[in-house]
Image 1 (cartoon, rainbow, N blue to C red):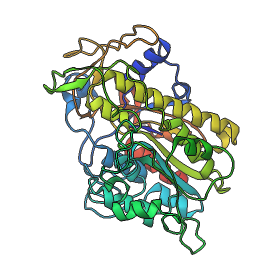
Image 2: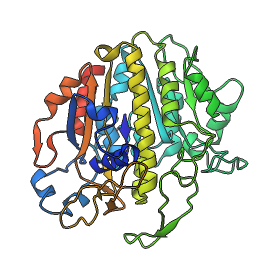
Image 3: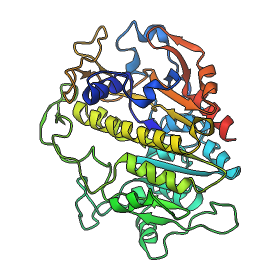
Length: 422
């Protein structure tokens, strides 16, 4: 599971808002707790320099495409790369190896289904910006069994029907969307190895996602919630003020000041639906779940929306842990909870040139925190793991940071996932 854009302080700020103190998330009590570096091909992370110069981590950052590709393949690459190496050659995803050994796979995200992180576990493209090409590979050419994410062309950011005036690029273009929405559904690749194409079942309404979490399910499901880009982050904002880092207006809403859009599923509901589809495979499955809009809110330096998105991700983790406890427990399952990079350089108040901690203002109150960037940073991010094979990640954490302790690299994570799923 990936919280896109998270860092240690994103977790702390959300903990304070949800509980008034830190350490309350289920993953924070996992036996494997380590840091992870995320730099691009040709880059590096210097743990001593990172804590001497406040500005060190503002350069050398990865993007979600390269980071997800590395976590999926174990190979470092360039910014914008989707499933390809620095020369542009296709790499083999860990999920492809899982499929070759008879297991089902899926990707779920709170942003567009063809966005960088889900794409980086399934597709191959020299640029993350080719949304139609990426979506069409995922839908027509991959053996993926579950794809869920935003990009609905017929609803706006608030989940209001708009006469289908949005672009269809995130769902593969006009022809693909027409194919998905017709009576028969789109025919995809052979997902189960029986030599015939396997069709997709499209779900859109929140009640459909909820129903999918229970009982019998179709073999392959593509879920496109009735909202445009993100589940909640892009909905309207009541209060704005000029961001000193950008000079433009940014949302300063406290969490949930604008009520959430109730017509779209939560990330937890989508996750439970995906699990109920994938667990039909007795050989097992691999699933990537992304809380993608933590990154979007952090780019906007919107503390309230950042907390909302991280809290939604936290609830999804809790739902997955509950599923694991009901389905074989930790001897039969592995859960990794991490991010792809830090975004926004979130710290406590009055940081720079030194670092301060986020300060709690009590439960349901926005903690004292501040952003120092509108982009990604080269900071270490946390990784938590529990279950079968998690000790491999602990053993891979051979580097040491003076503040964060032991850490591994995202290429190490990719290597372990390929070892387990291969």
